[in-house]
Length: 153
Image 1 (cartoon, rainbow, N blue to C red):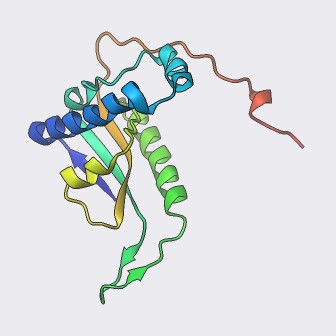
Image 2 (image 1 turned 30 degrees about the vertical axis):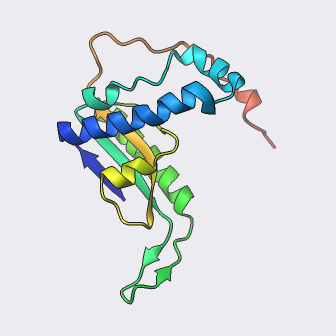
Image 3 (image 1 turned 120 degrees about the horizontal axis):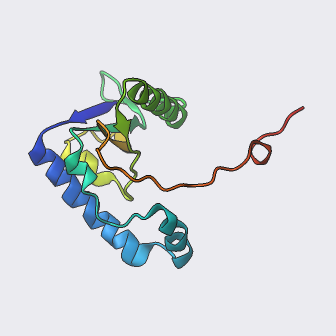
């Protein structure tokens, strides 16, 4: 399931809640090694992009179905399906000439509360989507060479 949000009031509410969680993460939850690993990304707990982006797409993973009689039903491969769907969505966004950012504030349960989602839906990914900014700096990260991420038989 996904929710598309363009309402500025809801986006502000999401930003406020995300920044609360991120502040806690950057100021006590994350170990020093994690903070050190994040430095090249030049990120911190401020998440202004949540309000700047014209749309937020919030993907929810269904942990179980609710059957007509109210019983819980199994959902198979929910995590894998969400991951694959998000990959296709991100590729489509890029193909359309738009830009996206994958954001996973932790914990993310506030998204279900803000968007009034049912109990069986758990936040999976927050994707701000829009046109690229006129001035945008992306960290020049080195990618692992193919030999480090593959095995050929």
